[in-house]
Length: 242
Image (cartoon, rainbow, N blue to C red; front, side, top):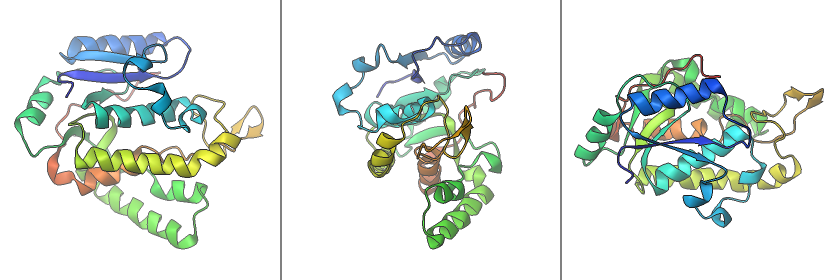
């Protein structure tokens, strides 16, 4: 396990904006941990690029980061944080995860019900059968009601190679398998492209719903494994980061 290491990802080839650089500095200064920024120039140091899922190169930049955070949490463990301001030390959270043998992860409690991944919206975009859409709608409402039992998607610490990360990793890869054909035909052209939205006058046919390969997987898992997940991690700052 990468003890006291927090991974962050920048998946574009464009320079990191100044506001994000300030966030990185706050992460280094206030977390008391080792911040590892993974980008396109050093990614090969952490994984075999030939082993990356073939769908990866067709994803938008946000979804590439979604893929990488799962890869790193499953294979390496340690921390992950969006490039956002951190104001408190993460050392107590790392120590908690290390000292509690049965604990699998530490995250921050989901902030409110509106932060819950919208399973129903993803189901509609994917064109799933009505019965499946209704099931997704019910589950979305259920998780909204129980949002305090979930962890947010923007920062967390995981032990590697656990039943939790294995389920996360296998579900992610299955979903990318099912999307691969459509992704090849409609690869992302914009950093945060979303299906059905208009870009330069053209409706996007990018097939991956916004939360489909991260929140739609991780938040239900965080409920399922809630008894072995601590929700005590100090959350990052959710404003003034872009």
